[in-house]
Length: 382
Ligand code: SF4
Image (spheres, protein in one colour):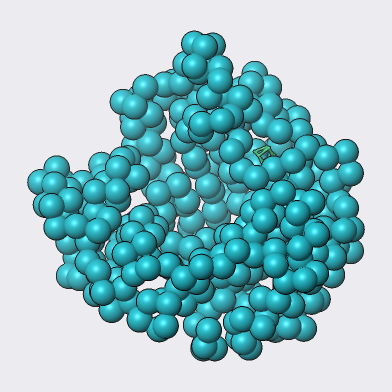
């Protein structure tokens, strides 16, 4: 893989959680000791193996996700950041983000001292009954207190919320969102609840014990979300992500949507590097189970690495790229990198339904198209 000035991101997956939420389909494990040093040592070893593949290039972002990376000790976070800095160099002003739960607010000061400068707070709901239903171990008042603590410690704070929940109507959601918008944060991630196969929620739905709002109600709540966030000065810059200005957007997540390069360490983490036109795009997946990842990291075999064929790469670039609200999908760049364009029939359908529009070489989702982004993007994929 050739070196270059193009931005490189680093994702660190910490797979442990104090409890497993019934809607979660991430690669997570319930652990009494949420901060094992053996995993930290494996992460450090994995970093060294990645450095041999990427060559020297500065890191534009580091993101600790999970799982619950706020269970890591400050010392463990510092060790990962120090090794990453020694191997690549963390660019001045780089985004160093971490996902945290509100009930860990006592740990926030240590996270800030360890070098975290952007905190994503998993608030998820501001209604205690919903929080209990979502399996969360914080209440609404605690979440709001944690948000204030975070704002005092980190230069950038984002809140995650889940809507289109069971028994939640548009007015309920509007009240909740208004409450969060009143905090005056510069970034929000607002996700529609999806029932993922294999989760506890999926099993409850199969038995009729969980009935989420239908597609029309969810689409109505999506459009309501756009109205309220735009009025508050936090428009969507990606399907589920809202920021006050360009500088408030998530640097790290933009790397995914733009099809840039990122390396990912930790159990089950996915990396992407390069492009078909530049000698191939590498797709790597780390061993999913923590024990296997730890056992393999020292010898450099924790990552299963393949080179994507051009079409597979093009599909990924379409599915991710079209999610960016203003930029949309740059079809010239897509063709230059992969030799593929979008599916012309799918594009015609999207145009006829007013779900997409062309802006020069770009294809941009319309407001109504964004409510069905996955389906529209699937239609565009070559
Ligand atoms: S805390 Fe987050 S990562 Fe852990 S189980 Fe819940 S939703 Fe999944």
